[in-house]
Amino acid sequence: MMRAFLSHTIFLLLAISTLVMSSPSSAAPVGPHSGDYLVQIRNELSGTATILKVHCKSNGGGDLGSHWISSGERFTVRFHNDKCVSTEYWCKLSWEYSKSKSHGGNYRFFNCDKSFLESCGFQDCTWKVKDDGIYLHDLDELQDLKYYHWQT
Image 1: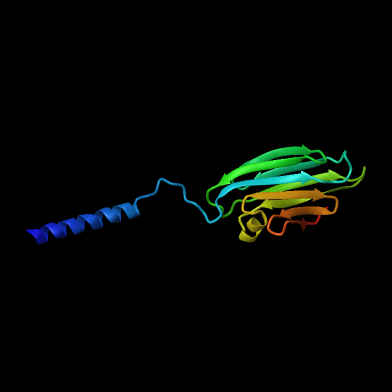
Image 2: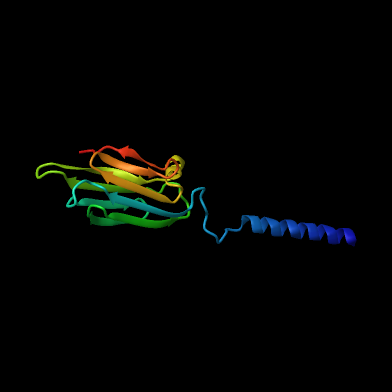
């Protein structure tokens, strides 16, 4: 009688543990670099009247529209990412540096690459747009690093 009781108890415990381990979790899956992120694009172009046009899109959040950023101002995107695996933000930048000439191009301002996220301190990616290119403020090194040259 005792042996039958133990056998049934062990069987019941195994069945319950199998169900618990195979049932889908209600919690959202969390990636290795999940969390809240801030991406800032600062207009640090010379000249107080230099306007920077910024048009950003993400592969997960859609089109963020066009924004015109005055000198000394910034464009900011905040988002939460549960699974930072393939999230990317791309922005098209353009500005005129004379009546007949302009600079611009398409640039990736956020991705889930570990080395990139380390530069951002895993939360704050601050970009500085300057006359000679685009700089990422590296929180690990505490300095601005030239990341992109102007494409045009």
